[in-house]
Image 1 (tube, rainbow, N blue to C red):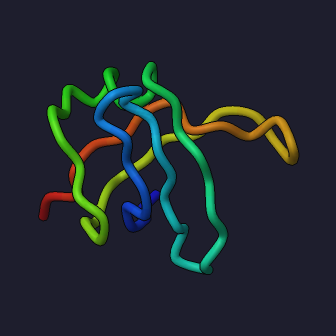
Image 2 (image 1 turned 90 degrees about the horizontal axis):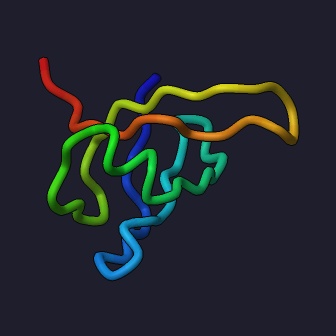
Length: 67
């Protein structure tokens, strides 16, 4: 699934993305680290993977969107 980076804190390696429908979702350091990224800027297109449903849905992976 694609999203747009919204916030990122390099100290905690966590942040949030906006899904294409405008829904915000937060990610933690584990999801950021799983993607092998070193930095993320606001506005970058990213690819995310999620697990769970409803209120239990969480981001498990954040990588840069490549074509």
